[in-house]
Image 1 (cartoon, rainbow over the protein chains, first blue to last red):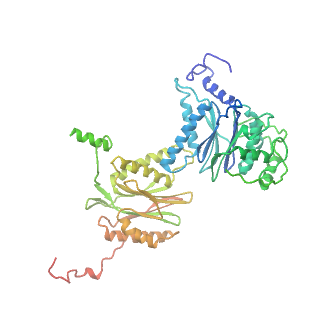
Image 2 (tube, helix red, strand yellow):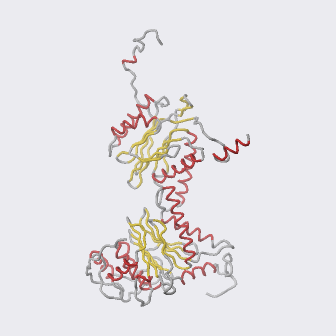
Image 3 (cartoon, rainbow over the protein chains, first blue to last red):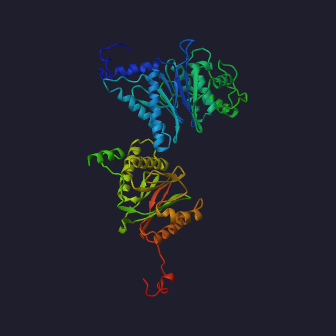
Amino acid sequence: MFRNQYDTDVTTWSPAGRLFQVEYAMEAVKQGSAAIGLRSKTHVVLGCVNKANSELTSHQKKIFKVDDHIGVAIAGLTADGRVLSRYMRSECINYGFTYESPLPVGRLVVQLADKAQVCTQRSWKRPYGVGLLVGGLDESGAHLYYNCPSGNYFEYQAFAIGSRSQAAKTYLERRFNSFMDSSRDDLIKDALLAIRETLQGETLKSSICTVAVVGAGEAFHVLDNETVQKLIDAFEIAGGEEAPADAPDTAAEEGGTADQGAAAAADQGAAADQGAAADQGAATDEGVAPMEI
Amino acid sequence: MESNQAKNSLLSSHDNIQRTQYPYVTGTSVVALKYKDGILMASDMGGSYGSTLRYKSVERLKPIGKHSLLGASGELSDFQEILRYLDELILYDNMWDDGNSLGPKEVHNYLTRVMYNRRNKFDPLWNTLVLGGVKKGQKYLGMVSMIGVNFEDDHVATGFGNHLARPILRDEWREDLTFEEGVKLLEKCMRVLLYRDRSAVNKLQIAKITEEGVTISQPYSLKTFWGFSAFQNPTVGAEGSW
């Protein structure tokens, strides 16, 4: 992107029909650290890379619980993300008070998108510099949405945003066909592997990533460090042993892995490349203890 | 004068200064119960003007959206106001056009909020409402009063129905009544109300709501029996006295 005479105001169109300020805001999302989301019929998993600036500080919070049935992972200007999370929590609570029923995810996402659109059409405002992966459950099932600073939103089977998210997207594109029927544990495993892809060779450990789950009968919550580390060890990262929690699930997963075609992800048109499988094959049931919160 | 008005405005809504209302045209009891396939609700078609049975074709049962049925007793103009509120609510719900829709539980809670808020402003909607419906196989039946008291149950009634119909229902209601059994039970309750509630009229409607939708029957009358021997020669024990 280069500077030009049409990029000062969000309310100025370029001759090519672009709003540069909005595009620059989307650039801010690409600079933030990675966040990924994936969903099955019954669960949604959100994950993000959480690297603290120095050893002295704690890392920034990028995953927020919005309600028992909705959570959000952000990438970009985390302050903007925090403010939008507060808005989402407020909307959920108000709806719950009036109707004693959880706010459908699809409606929350539209409200969020409309809020973002306002900032693209006022000369005294600026677009929110944050991309949001909204994951939640409602009557019609599990949903994952991506909300853009432009005010657009899309529903996804799996998605990744932020820096080096392309690597995660490539991984997800290879495997997304199996997600709908995945078990909860397999979904988490895929999330961890997708996060690992963005680390470019660095070891995956629970101190630099955060994972959150929401599912049928399971309120949205962030998995604590200990649980995540146990999962990382059980699933094993740098191409070592395997053993996800349940044997039947691995069998299903193996079947899935065997026939991965060059399927495009729900959003991308780009062809996926097969590459060396980052996922493990043989099933050795370690009998890992079921996840508890 | 002015100071009275100022005092009152602290206690009530700004434009119409009211403390208590009096109902003018009222409907009497509504009775409802859960049955196998959904909810059955009955009410008569009377609109009383004080002690005069003035209007005899008032529909007090109305469908709301796809999944709910509302029955009201009390001030009829307030009922019409509530129908307007719900109209708007359902309209906005439909405008989302997203496959989600407000079910009976949501409508019931919305009504509770409205009724309770009005009560807090000392400007109540003078109604007791019965809200029933089915959504995704789940049957729901609830009640809200003019002061915001609300609850759910397997059978509910308003006004006199609480005193005359509920005891019958407590004895004879059971899970999974068939449609015919439910109607018979409701008619039994309505007949007692007809005999004993002075504001009841003998013209009623029964509505049913199931997963498929709402059906409200055509108005009809109940058979009554007045041939009791005690009604022959009522003054036989005390001739000449009034």
